[in-house]
Amino acid sequence: EPEVTQTPSHQVTQMGQEVILRCVPISNHLYFYWYRQILGQKVEFLVSFYNNEISEKSEIFDDQFSVERPDGSNFTLKIRSTKLEDSAMYFCASSGTEVDGYTFGSGTRLTVV
Amino acid sequence: RKEVEQDPGPFNVPEGATVAFNCTYSNSASQSFFWYRQDCRKEPKLLMSVYSSGNEDGRFTAQLNRASQYISLLIRDSKLSDSATYLCVVNPSRQAAGNKLTFGGGTRVLVKP
Image 1 (spheres, each protein chain N blue to C red):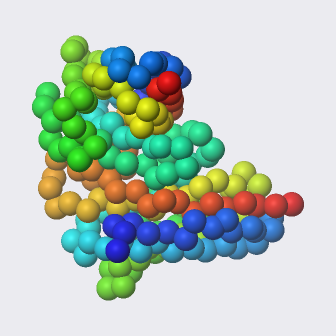
Image 2 (image 1 turned 90 degrees about the vertical axis):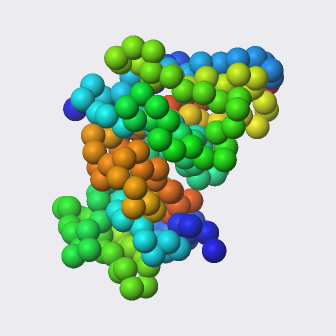
């Protein structure tokens, strides 16, 4: 079964540092997403990406966040200057059409200290 | 009112019993509906899409009531492996591409021997 791959599985970083979370979506999918889940809370939408540009973003996705698809396979989320409250599980997802359920990656647990 | 609301549980279910729970959503224009399953510290995994006519997948039955704006999930003949958090997920937008999903907080189900 095709899967979405995320690396690293766990990242510990110091407050103020930049982090890049990496994702390889399913190869024939067209839509890509980042979600996050703070421990004990619900899954929250960050951003969607289609045709090499952001199609929608949430209030959480402020100027410290950016996304990129630098080549045909990787999809990255960059957090420029991490804060303690950025500690969360970050899930990448992809979908083939807009009405499909998504396939989520196994997540990157980001811990900001 | 929360966009997607669920009883957090836990629902303690004897093995072999039936359990059912609902989810309400606030946006009457919501287009598509899903149940996802999430195990502890893992990614959400699509359990089933929910169709207007209701649908069944093995021991799982999902129903949609657009008039009352709720969806339901019923699990028959519960197995120990059904223990998980069940996430109600709604696509709130009419926009075709790059739709975000809105997650409920999840309903925790514990199946006990």
